[in-house]
Length: 77
Image 1 (cartoon, rainbow, N blue to C red):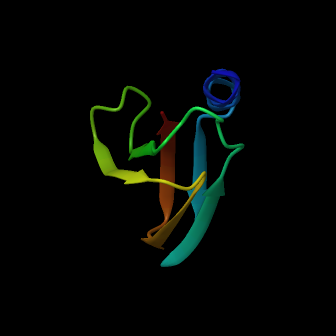
Image 2 (cartoon, rainbow, N blue to C red; image 1 turned 90 degrees about the vertical axis):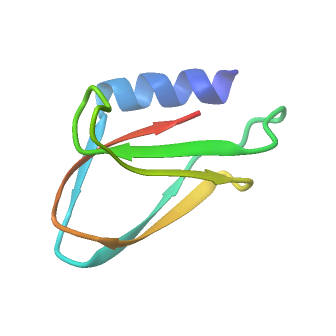
C-alpha cells in the first residue's frame, strides 16, 4: 500500500518522462511486501487514452526497449 501510494504521489507530481531517439530505459520502484506482480502502463497522454505499453512484471523494475523520442506518462499498479 505504501509503495502504491508513493508511486501515485510521485507520478502525480512527475507523471511524464522523455527520451531521445531509439534509447532504452529502466524503471525501478520499491517492492511492495504483499505484491506478487506489478502492472506497468505507459501512455502518450495524461488521461491514459493512448496506452502504448501494458505489461506485467514480477519484479519491481521494468526495462522498456526501443523507446522513441517523445513524452510519456507512466502508471504502476
